[in-house]
Picture 1 (spheres, rainbow, N blue to C red):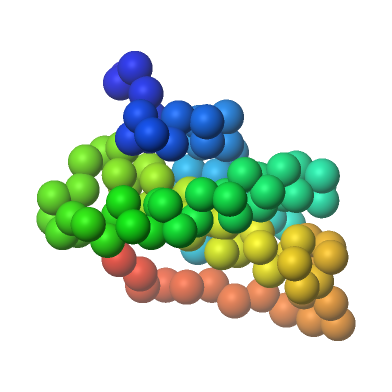
Picture 2: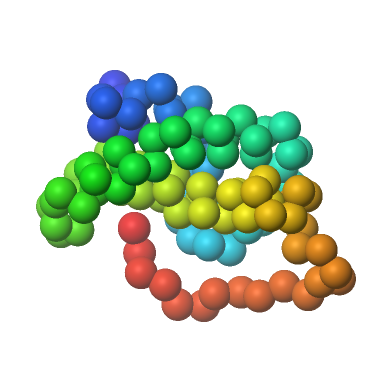
Length: 111
């Protein structure tokens, strides 16, 4: 296992890797539904302050040139987009008034 899981300049985000570095949107959404708002707020707060830096970092290289650390960082950003909806819009893990309706993404790029 590498000494760090993220590019060094984003090391302060490593406490979130275990929970949010997930392989696909279905896993990220399931993690959102099973998370407390306090946990999601902490993740959201950490990511929102670094989102522009992360975007610049990832956009500066070709996807084919991503290291494992870059891929981990990208997956954290994907998770952030899922979590931010709950924190910033819905104020709860589930989509309001959706009942038990769910969607499954069956095809998405592998990271």
